[in-house]
Image (tube, rainbow, N blue to C red; front, side, top):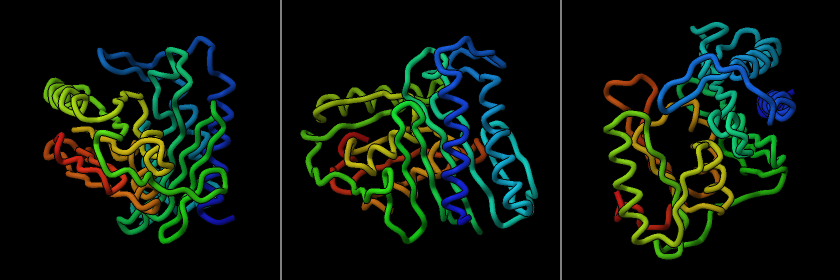
Length: 249
């Protein structure tokens, strides 16, 4: 089984778990003002970990719910077991499983699986990005006035302020604005031509690793700026590579 096939299998198995529990009362491990951690996050990551590391025992896993495997390995699986946990908890069927493989600091495999809609995005470095086995490409739109833009707002005051100001500026220009609750699905939608841009001032690596490879392989552009005070956190601007997103930043 190739790395891409393995990641796809793991994502879909985790998706089955999430779908089976969707709409049921979920145990909350931690609740803050802007976020929720579920026991199911850990259960989903453990399922993914078991599949990946049993097949690749020398590899490392870096996930939202912690580390596993050989952290000295050049091969790191980057996992978000539920991207959109708050959506899941509130019964909103917009969340996904995101798995990427990083080898020597380069993302070489990406999988994003939406278990509720039943869609799976897959990509390998240098290969054709796919949605359910069919090739995809970013939109051909070139004007903000015809674009759909996803703006994320971070969880601290500074990031929230930046996000809201960007949303205000973009609302005056773009055709439609969205705040969707899943960065990974937002990037998958850009790669598929459904959205034209996604911007957020602070986002974690596990949210965007698979999506970055997917967007770039589909003809788009992703710019990351590492946060000076948060390890593996970034500001992100992801677009179809055509619209003048700098006009709203």
